[in-house]
Image 1 (spheres, rainbow, N blue to C red):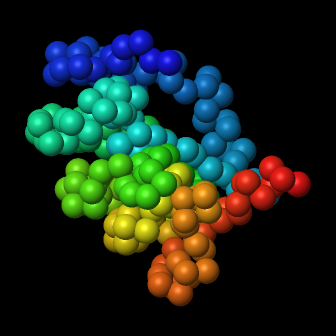
Image 2: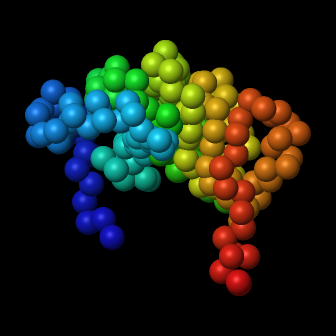
Length: 205
């Protein structure tokens, strides 16, 4: 249970930003260069997972306060998404430049059982530019799979993800009404589906 979220105002955010220095040496392992060199000869897939803008702002602000900020202070949302977009881009550059990444996975978790947590219009305004930037940078570096992870009913979000350049999604939650067969008919091969298995059936054996 969260007792208090770290960002309740702009002053909190300014203080929080000090923790996100992409050039901080301690952020990376001491043998990072050697790891990148070794991965050029890999015989397995490599994947990097990054929190998406909605996910990260929820960690900073809390879910309900964040949703209210989209309505009450959209300029603050824009400040936070711009900051997060740049920070992740600069950190990713260290693996993208090395040409060793096969999958970029963006964690978002932005849907309930029946709807998106924010409207598609809100997602288009505030989140789509960030997804599009990261997907474009990954593509330019030769990354074949850009995947977005979100639980819940994502039907109204999938078109935005495709527009952003995302070409796979997970977990395609059956309990929320997601249907991989229907999605394939609707979206063709613009999107790949990872999951689509009813966890409740697995639990029953």
